[in-house]
Image (spheres, one colour):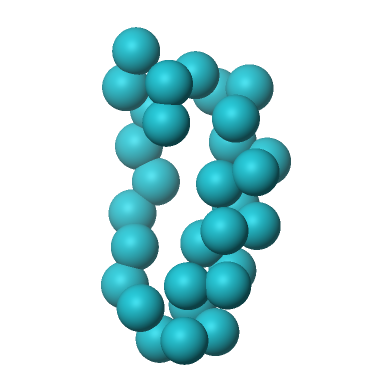
Length: 30
């Protein structure tokens, strides 16, 4: 994601991926 202000959206997306047992990693890269 582009900035830490997007973190709340990405956390929700990560929850959905976790429900489907899809591994994921959140990184802030700007």
